[in-house]
Length: 276
Image 1 (spheres, rainbow, N blue to C red):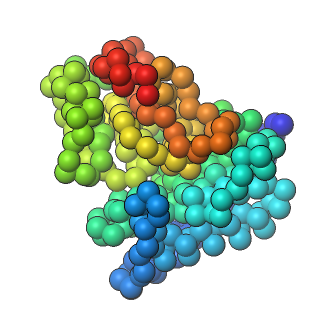
Image 2: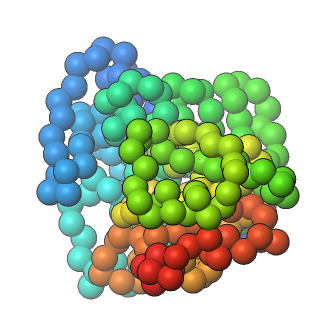
Image 3: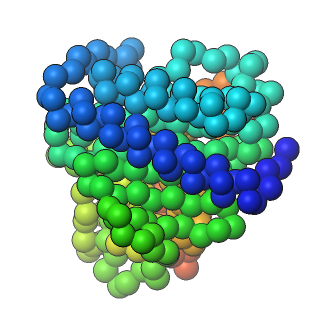
């Protein structure tokens, strides 16, 4: 299946507007400071804000194009047998960075991606507290918009001698990540929550982001489109682009987000990390 570029552009604009409205709904809950929290089997938190955003996005995407299925992190389980027949669908994380939401640092986002033939062809990431949006359409470039300003084109940068690493806000550094950082050598770091770390690479503020732990496909699809349209890469430990809806599990492999492919980032990974 293919979708005409002009239709993809229109769907991207519509998805961006929907993500903004979901962000407004989240801010209503965030501002009131009253929400319930439950924990999934993997101990990741879900709040009433996650569910409110999920319901809004699901309803509006289905109105936008009833023929396009929606797979959301907060959806009821959809079997691989069912979704394996999808050639195009929406992939959504209604509130990426729930822990950042609970910490009230503002570094959470709404993520919507359009996936066609197992690859993201459109992606939007909206950070409602920061009032920033990133978006991209395959072949159309990547953009950042702050507030009501005009969107500006973004691009990855050539890595300087001392690279900048994007990393999570977690105060703990796992042994595998520490090993990777040590192998890079002297470097600067920027801490950020949710998929916004990948956006730092896309806009040329950071050079590398290593994710050496579990994530869902909904966490990366929009970011992948944005990073790739900005000239960068999101690859697994064997330098292969991430793909979507190709197996029963929706958990990504470990991956690297980088802008400058003149650097062999994989060389900084130990052999056991490269096999994950």
